[in-house]
Length: 427
Image (cartoon, rainbow, N blue to C red):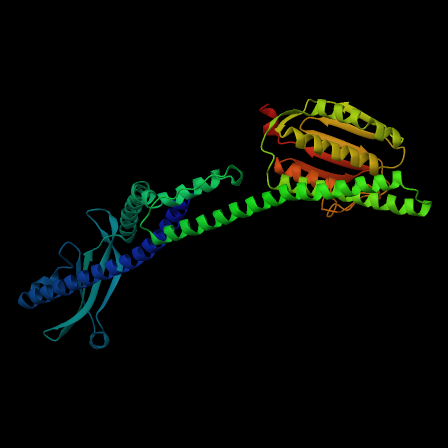
């Protein structure tokens, strides 16, 4: 829901509550005013009737006065003495209309020539149901007018007021730190928007500077670390070849070479992981994963022979997805290599291409920890050549392109890559 509509919805809800409270208070106040007016009219009507009776006593011979709205009856002195005038709402039968009509009635007593009489004076009043209905209809039209006014206000005025904010949101949505773009901010007289633009500009500039510094560090580390490592390895190899070393010394040199080579692989993997997370692989192409997996199987043929294993491929669907081709190769290679190195000796590795999915399976005796499997430096097995980054790199590539990389255990290790259906369908 848009911010303007969200504010309007809450404002209309508050208005509805206030109007409801106001309607109740207005109804009670209006009812009180109506009763005061009716009671005053009844008191005046009673005085007129009593005055006429005092002038002409023959009027008492009439049972109903003024079309049945006035009644007089003789009462005892005790009733007269203890009676207090009272107003009430009641119904009386109107013969002309042949129905009961709501009236406001005043009952009082008076004395005439030693006799005592009770007088009932009534007047028609608006039915309460009709009054409530009229009030609700008026409130409904008022509320409808407020809604229309609010919508017009949002579209004509508030949208203009909030334009700098929405402009900032659009730029943030389209902003990419890799494209080295500058954000432009609309000028506004609203202090909060100016402060927001200033803070966003500062945060974006800091992020860009941090990204550039990290990118520079990655590039420098790639050159500065690889060169001394390569020199050290070459010198140790020359030392082992050109000097007469005893067996113990050769073992020491070999151990150092193994550690340096492992450090070289670790450095390359960490640099690759940083580049992936910093989105430095921008070029994309439509990758044919069927052809890619077939090529990967050929590339790992020597390793599978060494592991006394086989790779079985089942193609039940054609899987194509747009991503960086180099990262696609790394993704599949890491998973296949992991299956070969960490599976049971001599066990087969199966790969299935299904609609929107690639599934790899290799035999295993026990399940791996799903919570730490894809974290850095968590080795999936005991292979000495592993640096614990292969699955972390595969997970980073999957997250980069919105793929889902899952693991579960069922008489072996299952690794599944699930592709977005919409992306694949559009291809």
